[in-house]
Image (cartoon, rainbow, N blue to C red; front, top):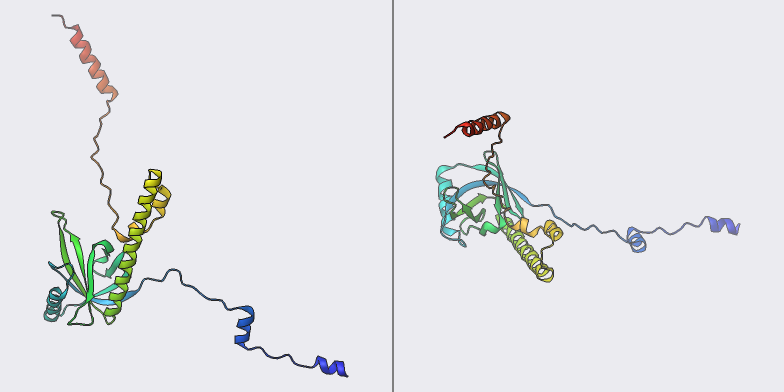
Length: 225
């Protein structure tokens, strides 16, 4: 009877917290976060002489928007490479990190996010500064995230440049494998387009041309002076 009573004794119930202490608790770590994207209204761009100031350009863009009332829907993604913008009319437009000189929220309009970009004209290959602006309810969040990503891209670019310079000084040549795996340069700067040199066409002589040359040479040789 005593043995039967001992078998019927119920074991104490373990709570979820006690199970975590006994078996441990798994933690999830995010290695690469997804690039934030925002739905905005593009207000256009204007030429500006200031690389670190947006006040006058932002006022001009806002006045043009109020007068025209033309809105262009744009999806803006903030990455380490810079800004990626999508519109139905123009598709994808990339603004590279090395050419973004400044970004901030307009002091007069808290929902207006602006950035100054150094464009390169196609005619004379001259550079000009243009201020772009979008309307978004999370403009201040866009400013913080873009500044953080631009700072990270610049630090990674400098770190890889210093590492490549040290390796070149020690070994006398660059490491091709390290150069292929490096991402700082590709993230910070726009990849260069290789220029093709002029190719000279060589005309191969056909058998008929060879026969003509032989006949001409034989004709010249048969002439007696």
